[in-house]
Image (cartoon, rainbow over all chains, first blue to last red; front, side, top):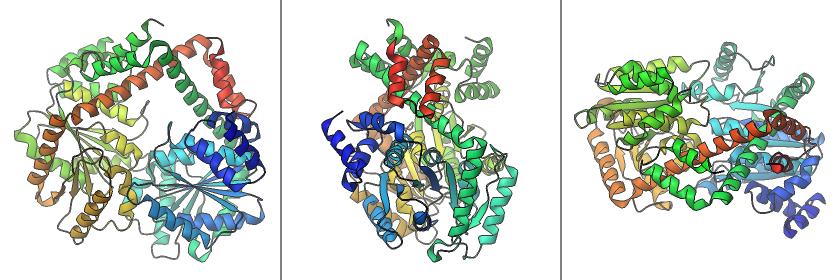
Length: 314
Length: 314
């Protein structure tokens, strides 16, 4: 193992926050030492409870997650929040800063907060998130809350790392609510109407209920709808109860293990693909690949034939 | 080639709409015959102009795209719209139906409309879109407009297939506009403020201008901001002029070729990865891969060691 990674690992196991942060950066960005760290920690993973929280922007998720972390403070020794924020070369820093400041008002010192950029991860955001969760898990974090903003395919992939997925909506999103929530509704285990003191909360809950009744669930689990007002700290107990009930069901039914096996398969297959391409490039040379690509771009060769040629003399 | 694919291909070249639709379904879903169709058509691709239109839901993109297609009706013999719609098991059909009905009001018979689901494509949505665009291109479509709804990473990948990317916003999206547009702003070649007759249009244009001035462009091209009101058919000429100016610039500067080469590289590399994994599985057997995955899921093995073991005796 790279010496620096090894020393960070030793100190992180002892609880040193700077070393934990450094380890997380290494695995988030797949820097040198990443594989060694994960090899070393992997046997100790699989113990943490992982809760995902997602939903459209403006739903008050950060406050809700802070409240949830505070609620679970007495249950778990170590709690971490992994916030996957939309990053921007223009405004990303400021947005992030605001969120973190906001959080400080509600959180104990015991909660570890990690912000991840939503772009620029080799191999994809969901794999980077999984690696970060695995490190926190192995270092003894009992509860990891993964928070994403947005409702696209990528957010769906990210929250899939969780054992329980909470989808947070708010009253008054208008007609777009249907289009936006389509893909995400299918992976939600608990539905949250936050800002439930606002007008339209009943209507939003009714819309969700109706959409649920139309869909065919992947499992027999029926996602409950919980109303919260994170700002006033109301409904958090009910939300935690709904999450606990889902964990109990998914553990007993084997659904949790099935999800985790699915995640393991994806990671093994992704690493396999990377390793195979690397081996091929070492054998035939990056130049030959580039040359084939250039011919495809000039339409002299179709991409299928290009691959046939590259693999021909193996 | 599979006989049915071959006969569809012959009829599609003759302009038969049903055969074109069938070919597109085969390549969209990577059904048997897909590779043969693309091998056969690939030398004739690379001629169409491809324009991408993206932005948050509710921006009036469908109407704008219809107007744009109508505007270009005199320039191009064949025009196609590829609409990548958010699909939903609950409401997808209805939304799609509405859009298509809406379109009929503005469009000539000469415009071919293809709707694609946003999920469920092996190998990813952007690759499926590229294949659909390539088939339309090879069949003599002069202009292909690719329209996506949303502003996540996936929409960014999809509109990347275009030579020119238009980002459509509307007044009154509120503070969320900053977070939402972060990733997309970087790939936009033309910025459109649609519904520009609504209050707040000046502010939206000013916000965009400011965000642009803060960012470092990937190229010397400075995205112009165009105001339109698609419903009233105003500003469409100005938008078309901005698109034409970008095409002229990107052709002269080599940026268009660089983008197309990038797309070719991605496709070759993706096919290469698929072929390598398939070969490996044929050699060592799917069972051994599944067994390794199960051990990773049980934390008996880390994913890196699993890959080492699978590749060990090759």
